[in-house]
Length: 212
Image (tube, rainbow, N blue to C red):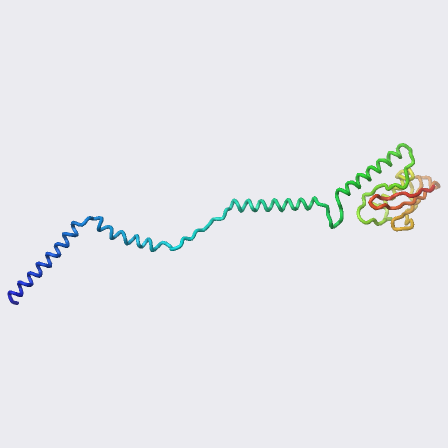
């Protein structure tokens, strides 16, 4: 290598080393915050990228309101059931108020007749004795039935006989709502009474005539 070329090479090396030294000095004298800023910016970008574009908000149900609604529905259903129970039944055609009035009238009529018997007065004929039966009436001749017992009651009130009277017969009196009976005082078979009865709707049996 020639001397001139060697000198040029040395000069280039000197320039490169000088430039490298200047860079190192610049790095040493730079503030620390400037170096950290670059390192902190990258994580922020990563965190921003990780966040979802749209946030999904789940609304929790209002348990207390739901409970109150359920309780209110139960109370309304209970009130409707109670109202239905209190209303008269349309299917069987029974009105509780009318039934109560019938029973009161029957009890009043029976009390008046007992009062007449106790005072010795002759019971008035052509007056229904009252009844506990409801609905369509069918005359019954079965001993011990409600209708049979109410016939006997009407006969006793009309004749003044007691419960020990002898019943010879109770039969159809010429129609589905008419009956005829033959009775006598206890142990007096010769003193017979012929009693004609007729049914009055919702009021019971009525004695129309008594023959001794």
